[in-house]
Length: 556
Image 1 (cartoon, helix red, strand yellow):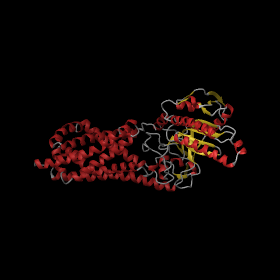
Image 2 (tube, one colour):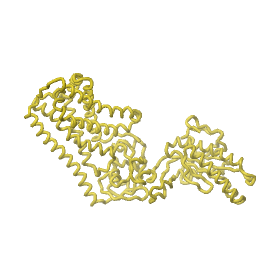
Image 3 (cartoon, one colour):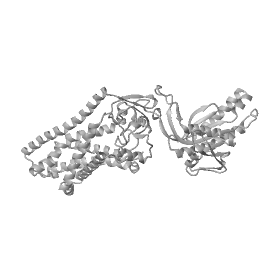
Image 4 (tube, helix red, strand yellow):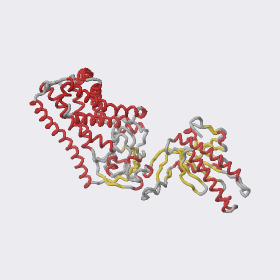
């Protein structure tokens, strides 16, 4: 997952939000000083007002507020659906609720101050708010802070440093509003007990402020209503004008209206698609492979191009949050969706839809099994086969591999599914060493009825595979059928058969050894031609893994 910059509207909304957050942090910190004394918060407010009530500070604050609100309304009006994550919905709902609570406060501190020369110092504001408006003011503080924290989390969670500092950030996010509410209430309470404050706001001025509040609320909530109405109109029109088809893995097909993004289409149809940044083109988690129809899509805009370039994506990879198909498309999601975000039993399983990633595929085969079956009793054959399959598959699982299937006397396994290709490569080589020990043990313990030595052959290759639950469609709740598809599987199988030509136990592609950072002393290096490949494949044929050196990265 990579971080992108987003388009100019997203960057402007982000920076305006950071300005507003800076103001809130300064204001809330000033509130918290009320825990010490009213005098402490009053003296500190001099610096707060010096910054934010100066001409540059007040201009910046007003521009940031207008920019943030208007861009938020514009983004809301452009949505095709309100089927979004719970946190996104909470942020949106809180953002729409903030004006209702904030307009009266802003009207008094800025409107009355500008119109009548009222000075909104702590002495006056706390007297106005305490005790009748204490609940509303505290709710306003909480709503603003939670909205800001959700936005910051969406932005910062793309960065590794934030992940390391997340416990400290969570503590800060919880402590600040508690201290701010405690501080302003304590300061107001102490002020009311120690002084008889004369309000410098006349009843006429308060009536003027009430009328302005009504007017501002009408304008702001009129704009909010227009934004939400735009979503409803688009949705109703879409019910009548669904003219394109989107095909997902497993043959799942949905109808959609041109104009919506692939991410919105997926959400409207309850189809899982990862989106860490919430559709802002700042991560790559919603990337999809265009199986067909990609040639008809508009070229990526600069924000999408930047993200795709950072992950080295090929031309058929696009970001679902940016793609707005006008014609039929078939797509393959490339990033698994966390199970906790999905409701349906099938949708809880990312492999139900298919995941493309680099893995190591292993094939194990029992040599001369046909000859063994022709000369031995059925009981002895089945006993030997079960003993070999059980011990070999245990070795694979113990080293972190996944046993895909048993194919007669053979085993197919996958490494690196839940980690990475390099870790999978080290695990696979470690498993080979244990399988070699299994082979030697079986040969030593075999009965006299088995005249030929017990020999196993292993093939290993690393490459991109599609991992999916084949045959899982329609089997609600079943978690079987997981397998790997792709050229890497065919190549690994070919390498296993190559042991016959070299008289070896293991034939492994150099890609696996390089990824593992390993060294195999005494291995025979060679090149083989693989069907459909112009460049020969470099391999190592290994007769014994006594010379395997995995380094410190692998634990046995």
